[in-house]
Image 1 (cartoon, helix red, strand yellow):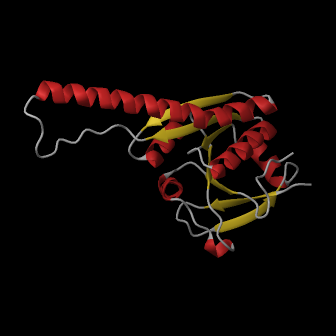
Image 2 (image 1 turned 180 degrees about the vertical axis):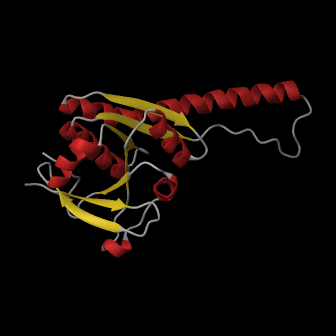
Image 3 (image 1 turned 45 degrees about the horizontal axis):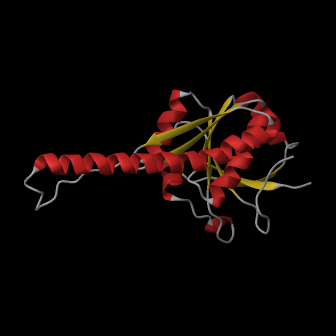
Length: 198
């Protein structure tokens, strides 16, 4: 039976518990009584793809709702020294640049979220797709989790050596630090492509 590894980290980052899990383990049974709405984050990376696969399958297993979120940076206009004297032309250029940026970010977000959409369709559940623009991705993730409301946030992390060498991405660490909602940090099993509980 294929298994994956999941790391729980408490809010102050002091407790790390690595658990071998599968769809039949006590954790899944426990989740059936705890989790009703799971928020899954993605940044388009292979690691987040694996976390999506895990999160969607977990939601299916425990009968929870699923929402996937990706956060992109907003377009920022900085007025620097040497700004053109014709402010009307400058403002128009900024408007065009902001529009182009927004269009690019929307296409990118749609690409990232399509992975969650397809994963949910494959197991026969619905998954709400959320794209937010925010200069602090961790805050957008927490805001959406509170708005829905969600009772679990799933994020991906890197693995580098043993448990003591786990490397958390900066946004993952910020969510762990600031979120009042439980956070599940997923990392792919070593020597396997990615984990999909059966």
